[in-house]
Image (tube, rainbow, N blue to C red):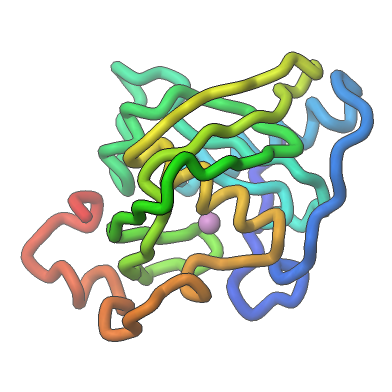
Length: 182
Ligand code: NI
């Protein structure tokens, strides 16, 4: 379909709560998901949420479509996350243990920060055809679901950083590494 412009932090649209999807399998919904996929691929994101391309719908996509041939240079760990279209997600934290790791965001280009996220959770929702999704995940998979679901509630990862000394420009934070290795 089309590569869309990704809204950047500071745009008030990113702070809004997105609307639930009420009809599945519609041409409008399928076109939205194609646009999100094209945009995520072009920008080498590990995930994207509909509000990031200016659409107020509770739709996120994340993971890698072809885990052998389509390595993500921004997020090598994303290879372990199956490509998922997740609509109207509901997250249930399984225990209150959290872990810190670096995150970036297509709406916050050039920056990385250490963000605490719940280590393990169950998530439910639907795919674009209305089929139920119910998974129990941990690690990077759990992290990316929390990051993308936050976008649907108007939360960007810098708002979750506890220690802002762990927030900065990727090339300054990691001067001796390839950018993709953080
Ligand atoms: Ni993001």
